[in-house]
Length: 213
Image 1 (cartoon, rainbow, N blue to C red):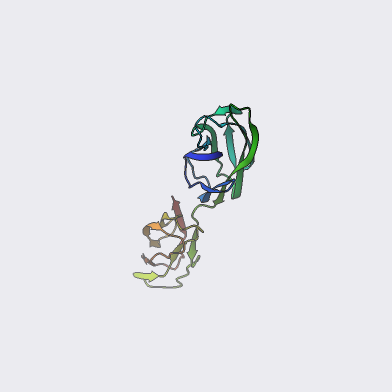
Image 2: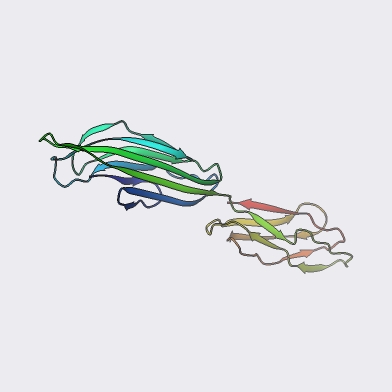
């Protein structure tokens, strides 16, 4: 019987009947994924009695598939490393690639028969990188005495996947008002601690966001 075997790359290949599925899940836009490598295999159990012949066909978007040439005489228990797939993570959205193995079996008695197609489906969902939001976006202290005060300015990581953590910091880019803070591993949906400001002045601060993966 023909089947697919995963040789390299992320994810876990799931088999159900004549269907094979590899779901890469959510990946960050621009993220590099290793090359996926698969083999066509003859999973028969009668040594060289039943030989496998076949060809491969690819269709879809968001991936680049490199397929081996049609083959014949693949003995039972043998594999042929003939599928490589690279994921394109530059475009947001859900992408799907299907690899179809058309095959037939034969043996020394002259028997030959077509076998059911084996269909390998690879999917990914490309999502934006970690994003930040400021709350409030503008702070007006009004008229205050020179000294120090604290204002609850918080940064939120609005990424929509749990592992889109990032490092973030805030600093003054203009004016005499100064505030600073830095956090590592700012997880999605988590608010940072408030930031303290000193050398207060009627002029409101201009804040910058430093976003680094």
